[in-house]
Image (cartoon, rainbow, N blue to C red; front, side, top):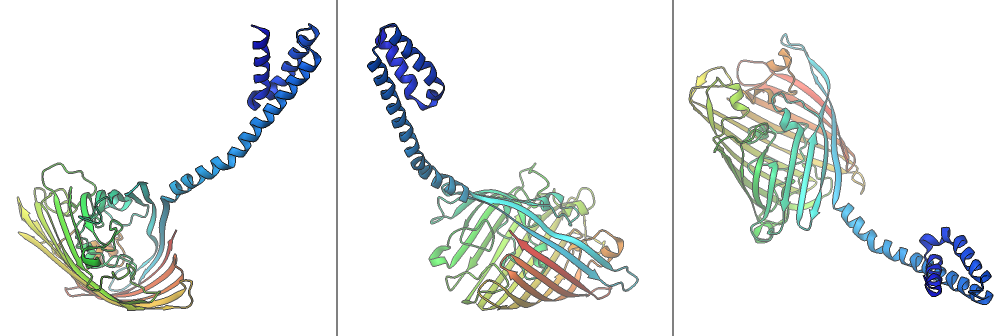
Length: 451
């Protein structure tokens, strides 16, 4: 190596901060040796060292000054990416009391109505997703449905034309769920007679506007006055993949004459102007592997149809709702067994729910209380649904005996809202069966916490 080349190497070693710290002593020793051999003068050695120090300071300054700039550029990207994802959940511990009467032991039970965990957001521009897991499993026969609830991806590229496209496990458009956040502690009778396990199935939908469901996104047609959803699914049972050519078809249509949708909450703690909406839905499935056929004799196949109507109105702190549902099944292959234990060629079930609420806000921070009244009627022939028409879906003989296939229930609710994410819902219900049976009261108190 020439003398000039050696000097350049030494200067480079001293100039780069990443290696200079460990190389200064070695470089100084080399320069001193060159001076002793007469290859460099004292002034040249001093000049080289000073030049190297200046170069090092310049490099360090450049690196330090660029750091805030890089952080400033990266931070918005990281923040934007993080803001596209949201972890959320709902916890609803519940207490149920049913007095002992008519020779049946009462119920005094602490359960979990919901214990949900979810993740939602956007994985790319106009590509949203939602995942929801349910840890509280109180419904026998629907373990899969009550564990994995939502798991879908939504494409919003055509939301201003045909609508959004959603693929995965999701609510069926024909599911009677208006409004979505219910005043009572349990789902409505009409929801139990809607298609799908817990209202959900696996498939693909096109939706325009909102129905109070998480899949809904954007505005409806004609200045938000016309809303619709249409989809195809494996079938009404989430625990089975589709192993035949029979699929479930669902369609729903809603109208918002004022162009403003009523809120999804049955309690209007924040006053809103007068608005109302109404609509209907229809679903059809010939899939034989469903919850309903599990309650039927071997070889029975059911062709199912679901019809539903709904309406809701809102003004100020008042809110009203109404829903009707019909579940029709035709037996194929053999006679079906109805809820009374009689063999028949078809099953027909209907349900009606309506109610209203009044909320009172105590301050501007979402603190207040509300009361609500609700009436429900059911005429059920599907044995798979009997367990839902009672206060608690327990497995004991006495609890099962309270299942009501035909009759009324009167409900009064008093709810305290301590924060927009914290509620205490108290519900008193009175069950009055039409058939040979007995009437009985029930009390349920439930804390609802969202995060």
